[in-house]
Image (cartoon, rainbow, N blue to C red):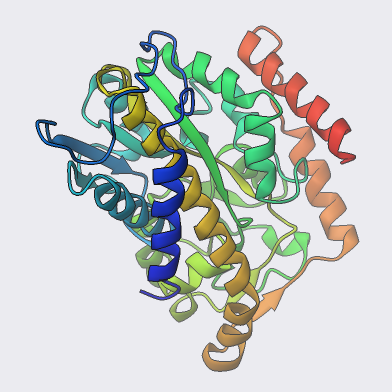
Amino acid sequence: MRGSITKRSAYLALTLVMLFGVLAGCAAPTADAPAPDEDTPSPAAPGQDMIEITMGNLWGGGHIQQVTDQFVEWCEEATDGRMKFTVLPGETAVPVEDHLDATGEGVFDLNYMYEGYYQEEIPAFQIMTGIPGMLREPADAWKISKLGGWEGLSQKIYAEHDIAFVGRIARAADAIVSTVPIAHVADLKGLKIRSEGIDAEALNSLGASTVFTPQDEVYVSLSSGLLDAAESGDATSQYDTGFYEVAKHWIQPPLQNCALGLVLNANMDFWNSLSGADRALIDKIWHYTGEVIIHDQEYRTKSVLELVQKEHGVTVYYWDDEDLKAWSEAVMSNVEQHPEDPYWVEAWDLLASYQEAMGY
């Protein structure tokens, strides 16, 4: 796999897990979760039962599958195989737009999800997936979640759907791949673009026509002409997916925001059936996996962009200040206000407080 994580990183992850994974209170608390059992060892021990885990994710490729594979590998190694995963990627079990309900219903024990798919049902996710321009770097995902109050808000929201919120991670900012030049905002007019949420609304207001296409269908849709362009991950994910073969024009951040709506969730009954130590271990490995992958992405981005230009004939665009201003205005004019929804109001207030604290 391109950009695969080194064995040295794996050993480091396991060391951190063994040292800190069994600390009381490390696991994400849930509305009905029992108190963590500090005395229950997480690695395999005589008499402990095997834990079989069905895990879903939003796409079986690129960054999403890379995170999933690394997380699963480290969990199984850290427990000497006592945790055994079956991964059902993308739409293998149910359509991705149904993953929220499927997780609450127990189709999945764990699920690596993207909150942007559920904004109509849960308006707060419009904010929590990251409004372009409001936050600036992947580290903001951890900071606003752990320090800025979004973790507690997420726990409340998901508990109403019989889901335990485990943790939020981020990846590098989304970029757009296109089969035609998009050097300026005006070039969006008339293009059919894969997008969703507030980004789609902003693109529509600027003259594009947006559709939602499952991630695993984007490559074929671009190559066949069903799509002119697509929001589909950061530059490293786009390279790993081979988009340079069918889309020769890449528009880079700061057009888009860093992706904040990537979360690991658990079916509530499954989560509450685990010992406190097992919950803590999953929590620790999930967050460490996210940190390793994002640093890998940041390290590779420059070399990937150089490579696709030099060897694959890709043109890379960075919008100028005038275009970025027009884009920002389009985004903000399409933020749907939901003052009647207490979770939306709380998410907005927490975002505003975080921005002020960070000087954004």
